[in-house]
Length: 279
Length: 279
Image (cartoon, rainbow over all chains, first blue to last red):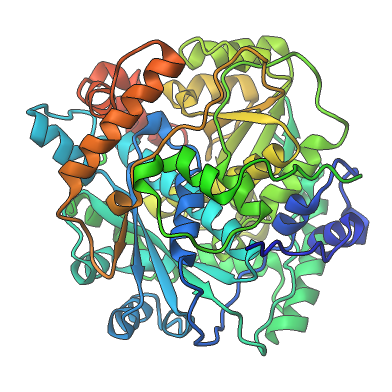
């Protein structure tokens, strides 16, 4: 069974969609895998169709193939299909309806509890677990794993969107999924088939000169690069979301008000209550 | 220019290498992209050969195509080729010689400073920045981006290995790379051509039943699943690293001693000093 996605975009077209014709990086090597990565879009509307049998297991095989710090494998994932549970997740995530629409909602977990159970079984106190470092390793490893799952899903013609808003209320997520102490839902991931009517244009990103540096940090051109990107993202927003917001105004609105954190300003204390001392 | 890697492994062979013949997940959909993901190995020895022109830019285009929370793009990356700087990085990372061997060492940055400069330019205080949530978003987005770069690199026949040990001394990394406050090197990534003599067998992972759950957390079979994996990883270690360690003993050694954190037990305080209050 071979479901390889065809190369739908040339290198030139793919880079133009991502950066705009005036901000193309130097042409480098290219192949169909890279074309797939460049074609990513987050999709916020799903058909109800079920995934083919074995799909979740294939995505998890891809996820487990990602690197994991010291092979600790301190992440887990829960596949949620129960409509009642998805409804709770959608409510936690500020009523994002696509969580209820998608056939499978994956909740990616920073999971220090598996290692802790091992320590308990062997009579060894895992003194490194209470540190911020161990939480960060678990969260990052969940991220690397999930990204591999996203690439695998998109290669199969499936759509995805990350749901960071599960962090609005990690304790509610833990309660509904039966998470033990030392386990936290870092983010969710909708998996399914894109509804035909949803926006799916590739979103432009900052020019490479703004994020890729050589040898040392920074560029003297940042303000100009941002202004150019503001124009591009403003046009994208108008085409796709019926808004005229540019990037700068979005960033200022997202980070300039505590209310935009939607409860995540309490994350440190909540994590401590959930078994991550973050020492 | 098409450098697509051929499918070198069948689905059955790829899953057998990753899980062992007795722990195969149900066969799901499959294609050459998924075969590439399953074939991942971390490589700790490099030839000095330079990368083809434009390779770093192609990897960064893949990285920027990954999802980023609210499109904040709060990560950056520095490509390091200077031998003197790579030597400092290798020293920070407990003398990992592959950092000096690889032609390009990418340092992935959680970067809240770009947004902060925007706020300063617009006269808006970004009150959400001092929270743990904002650091976590930046670190996770750096992780998603880097993983796309890894997939792109491996599709080109290049080898990689993540270097979490940059967190042994984030302030030294910041000093050498000229990082402003609010920027931290979350991890490094060696990129290059694998030296012919280095171990490159696919590393087995925990069986899916130990990490993938349905609807709610956990499995009653965890102890048995771990015992089976211990045997597999013990055999892998003997074949590849001339040690007889199984997984459990490695986890206990890594997490059971503060000294194994190699300074990362101080990470929370160091991040605070670097402009991440982690509120």
